[in-house]
Image (cartoon, rainbow, N blue to C red; front, side, top):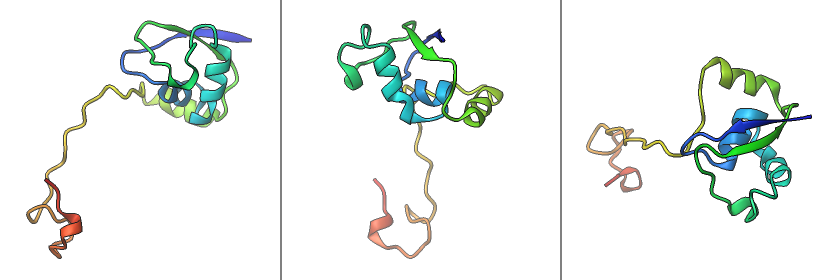
Length: 102
């Protein structure tokens, strides 16, 4: 049995797989089950509002439940602002240049 879901803006195949199957491994199933729509396979870009067919049985029900309980919609369209680093850009204050950021 399958059901249709609506892709949210900024979502990727991996985001949809995590949200509805509980694992990014389900991308293979998503591509296979939607091969008429995702003609470029894994390189397909999703658009908000697209309808995808998903299987009813998730890979990891606990992850799916946790995502739903937290009311999280995984997307890749979110801009994450950098967190300022203490000590002039060095987390552990040893001033080792491999820890410095721009």
